[in-house]
Structures are given as structure tokens and as C-alpha cells.
Image (cartoon, rainbow, N blue to C red; front, top):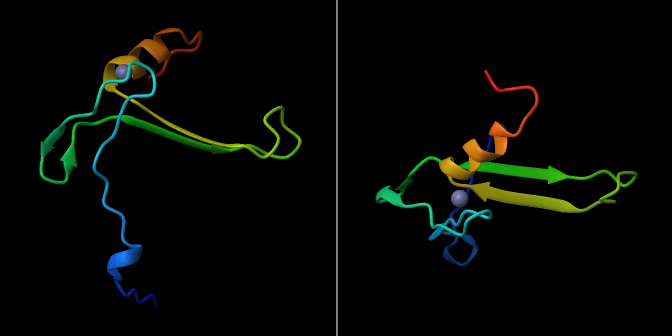
Length: 76
Ligand SMILES: [Zn+2]
């Protein structure tokens, strides 16, 4: 069982999402609901070329489509 106490100073409210590729802001459809976008997070291992780095980025739908159009093995 989990219990949570909401403390005002610890809560975070998401106010803006920007596409890392084109810089476009992901628009709000209505209060609290944003247009769909792609989000990626990766914690690199210590023996990778990135050596323990943590990356995260967001892409708008257009930039996501451009990204996977370049894949040799296409998404289904
Ligand atoms: Zn974009």
C-alpha cells in the first residue's frame, strides 16, 4: 500500500513542452491535456560511450515521423 501526502513546495506542475528538434512548443489541447508527442529517456551504462549520462528529449509528431523515416527497418 502506498500513501502520499501532497506538499505544495514539493509538487511540480508541467507548464510547457518544447520539441528538442524544431523548437516548436507542443500545444495544449485543453487544460492539462497536450497534443501527443514522443518522449524518450535513457540512462547510459558506465561502460557505454556515454558513460553514465542521463538523456531525455521530446519530439513533436512531425519530427518523430522524420526521425523514423530514416530507419532502415521501418516501424510497423
Ligand atoms: Zn519538432
